[in-house]
Length: 384
Picture 1 (cartoon, rainbow, N blue to C red):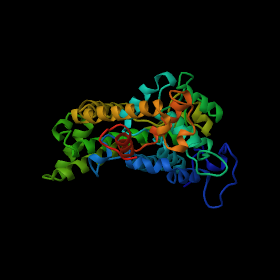
Picture 2 (picture 1 turned 30 degrees about the vertical axis):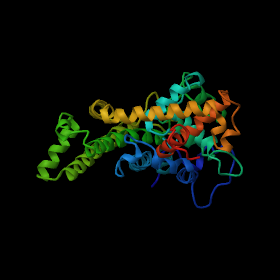
Picture 3 (picture 1 turned 90 degrees about the vertical axis):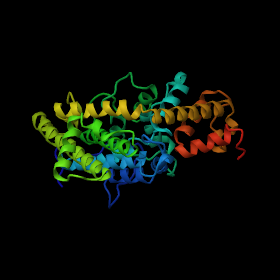
Picture 4 (picture 1 turned 60 degrees about the horizontal axis):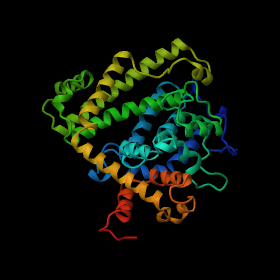
């Protein structure tokens, strides 16, 4: 497929922090995607919480399946808008690599633990994973991704400013990543694909878990219309098929709206290069006003009825306690860390110790965090 003039073409990439020869079979952005997929951090996403802690059930989304769904939607959008699919996919696959165990509950707990050290932000941690913490290659730390992929990851929620987390500003300066300006269209595609994916799969998971009720969803115009369409065409479906048919229609309508609205915006803005996209005053990929309202209504419904459900609150409270107790224990006695991590510390309570413990805990999966907590905190568990 021929790329549009406003697409980020791999042949014109700004390159990598550490120069490498081009590959004869893969473009620069394809190599970025492949490095992300083969990374340790990517594999760990299989056992990191999306909404439900991993061991709650085998069929709920994890950070890994979420990232794969985001990548699939991003590729569809990128193809429809004639921008680089591989770059959009790479950004989508990488966007959650910095998430701590237990999802946003773990992130909030680490942020509180590190309040005096700049806090904790999973977007900052993602950049650290990609540029420092993955240690697989002989010539450099990190994955040595292209400028375009790193820019897309750092801006996948939009432009940044000097009030961004200090660690992010510091890393961006070291990598010569501009904070201001819009992200590439590929990054905008990945960002909106994240919204589409979680709005739909969290509805699906919530219904399967019995925490949401189909009857309540009829109050949401987009979901109610999809339900009516399914029932009109396929009356009497059992619950599982009804849910799937409804969610797939909601997702399809969101994606179709995105493509039509974004094509109109691109036609009006008429960018002639990726830099024109960066200089534009607003994002060029987005929903129509009516669809944005419908998506916002779904998100508000999920916040009220799923994310704050008492069963989720119980998981959240336990997860926060596990993370805080692990952080406090390791900071107080860094000799309890595995040797390669303990070697990076500067004694109990030290700044390097706190940063090391941050990276150690952030990289944990849910089940590893629970196991470490049992080994270190629980008095009835004497495993080393």
